[in-house]
Image 1 (cartoon, one colour):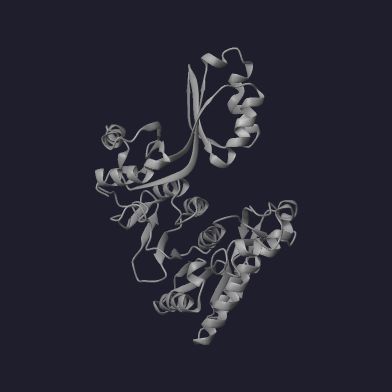
Image 2: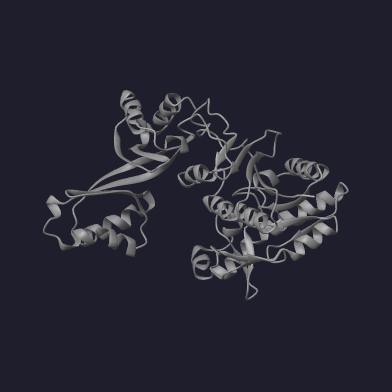
Length: 399
């Protein structure tokens, strides 16, 4: 019998009615001759009583920052409640289930509280539960340090838990259940005719996730690549086939140049001209200074006459202060969005950037900056043009 890891997110577990749908998915998997291993998130989202953000709101920010060990202890409770409730409801329909914390399931991490990394997974106890014909219900998002402390894996941690458990169990597949049908060619809230991507490579979905698409966390994709785990994104609420994620060699080649489009809002573009800073010895140290202050920058262009890059809006005042303190003169454009056009099919195909820029120019959308890699092209635009740009590009490439 083949092991299938099924991970259910907070919205899938938020109500008794939705948990009935979750139970149906688990039973269906078991009746198909598989051995389901279930991983759960905390129930609901912020405002719901057991959601992670709700639990965090019980303690003040200073305590969260200064005592991450205790904070991890608190926020691990949400997943524990989910696992026990779901086990109870499975038992109620005649299926024995065993709720397990991350530590009980053998997930061993380092002690980087709130952002712990998994060191190893001892699967013996999970296999014992499976051999007893019970269904393991494992708390996602958490593990146990070698010193015996409960740790959490950071945002997206339940996805990461599911993938790593799947890797150590040599699972046939890891199914990530959420409240959408899978990965779409663009945000359906922006593009009405966005379509479902039935199959996509690890590298493509990593780019989409890393650049703003929220269906799965980039860390989970990295783990899937590391352990060569077959992933699928499915909807708890229906029987849609969803999106299958495999390695590049297994993924069928697509005739489309572009696979999907995503975006990130709240970007700020900074331009630092050389001419007006030529006498300032700190000009050559700007990027080092930002790095030393933990400022993340991207879309970096360094020319003889200027340096151009973008920062997150939440960092802008710190960056402005840093530059002002060393008397660096700069120009800024706030309220920008970074659009990412992703597709392994563009590799080696000439004219893709030109086609993108031509499309945006035709729509009278100013492109502030561009960058590219072998499967992603980025365009920085004013945020007021984000939706218009995405719709135009989606139509241009017939996604």
